Amino acid sequence: MRYSFDEYVLDLERRELVKSGRPIDIEPQVFDLLVFLIRNRERVVSRDDLIAGVWGGRIVSESALASRVNAVRRAIGDDGTAQRLVKTMVRKGFRFVGDVRENAEGAALQAPSSDSLAQTISFCRTSDGVPIAVAPVGEGPVLVKTAHWLTHIEHDWQSPLWSPMFRRLAARFRLVRYDGRGSGLSDRDAADISQAGFVSDLDAVIDSLDADRFTLLGLSQGAAAAAMFAARHPDRVTRLILYGAYAQGRNRRGSPEDAATGQTLLAMMQQGWGREDSAFMRAFSSLYLTDAPREQIKWFADLQRLSATGTMAARIRTACDDIDITAILPEIKVPTLIIHARHDHVVPLEQGRQIAAGIPGAKFVILDSENHILVPGGPAWDTLLSEIEAFAVEA
Image 1 (cartoon, rainbow, N blue to C red):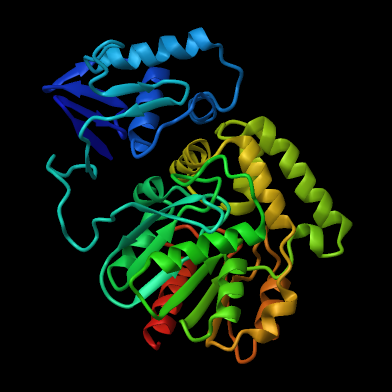
Image 2 (image 1 turned 30 degrees about the vertical axis):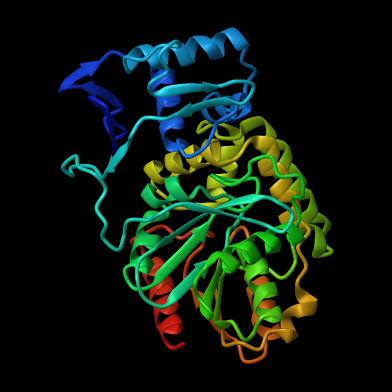
């Protein structure tokens, strides 16, 4: 991925900043800070955001932070007085205000095209006042993907982990994605982090759309909000598709072992959030991305730093562990497809079976995989996408 602005090109693959064809000498951490500011240019990033996203949550002094911001400005021909590109928002943080053009690796540098796969980011507001970032893209029947534990709609669109799925779906549907409260480009400091809050996010997104009927796609934790909406609004949901879903979070399954695993991951998360070499990241990748290549694991570590602070991620994770939708499953009256990996290390197959058995007439598809997050290009990944496409177009 390349970002071009002013006379500069920021090349993420080569980790290089170029001005008018000449490389600029820039320290690695300053480079990372510039990338973080540009990726989050749609909003003001706070001091805490920067520390979580660039320093991995480690303690950083005010002087060290100010020094790095000044180094970014010097590297791109800016300064604290002019603030042409990096603007200080008093008592709020910083924002990159330059005109940025995004380009995939190897593409000619030009303004974003208006083709059907150019996503547009906008905001809606929930009933409790939380701003939610929404990104519709593509043409065709509307497919709304609910937010799960960790999203960043801008970063995910370029990620080798998520982009292949989203671009394939957007080539066939009007794909609507959004960042839930506490994550990505949505309100990172939302007070209410609960399943009720997650459903409120979805309600706001649906209300912002010009679509009476649509298919709902819920992945992992996002399946609960999708199922609850479908139960309440069968007149609006044409099809419900759930992958890697669970009816009960770790704290609701009556298993001391599951609850203990959840608490262990929460403790590790606070220490190693966003750090590629941390014990948490090693444990996380072994569970979620069993056979993913290193590049995709690195992108996932980047996603952690960009999407939320370690503290907020733990709060969201705790709310997900308290999910219990068993009571509403029989109330879902829309055609439903449940897909689950046979050897999923994060959500046991039994959870998918429980949902499929609880929803009248639900179709249950088992994939031959042990990944919770499927690696693009693999046979299970292609089967997942083919099942989603075939089921959604029947609507």
